[in-house]
Every structure is written in structure tokens, then in C-alpha cells.
Image 1 (cartoon, rainbow, N blue to C red):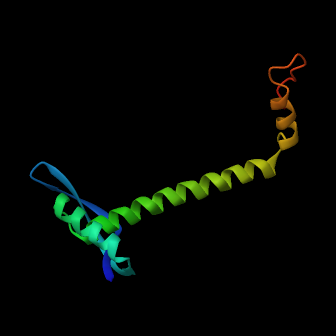
Image 2: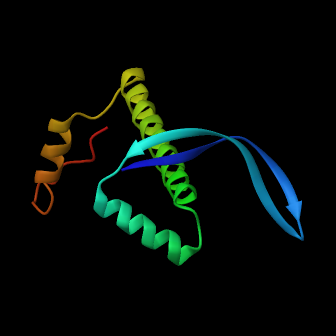
Image 3: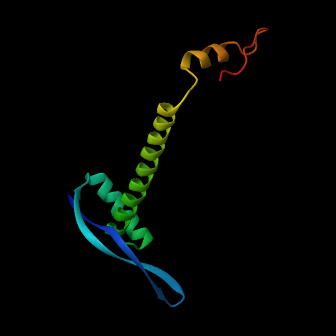
Length: 109
């Protein structure tokens, strides 16, 4: 089944009866989803009184934000490793294996 989604772009704020609402210029995106997910999305849309396209766009926006954060953190960690000294896996392993023994090693640096 093909589902049409509205992807949010260029948000603008509009105040309506003491309630702030975000209006966006959107683009259309078509995706294919399996029948079971479509059925679940239908039920969720009915229960939440929201359009399926709204729920799908919200889910995609949350996913993209999460993935962007994760990839940025991975890149930052890689940059830290590239920039300077670090403790090797072997050093940490030896230190951990010494725990609880008479000759416990100092924290590797």
C-alpha cells in the first residue's frame, strides 16, 4: 500500500485562541508499508484523532532527529580517537581482570 506523507519544512508560528500552532510548507513523499503496519497506523489514527499522514510524518521526523544525533555522536567519538591518546582495549581488559585480586592494577590512562 502506498502512503502519502507530508514532510515538514520551513516552520512558521501562528497563534490561534491562546494556542500556538506550527504551520509548515510541506512536500509529498510516498512510501510502501506492510499491511499489518498499515492496520496499526489506521487504528492509531482513529484513537488519536489524527491523520495517518500526520502520524507518519511525526514518526519520520523523530527517527531522522534520532539518527542525526547518533551519527553526530559517533563522528565526535571518532574525532576524539583520531585527535589524541586513548586507552587500548588490552589495557582496559588487564585492568578489569585485576579487580578483586591482591595486585589490582591502577586505572589505565
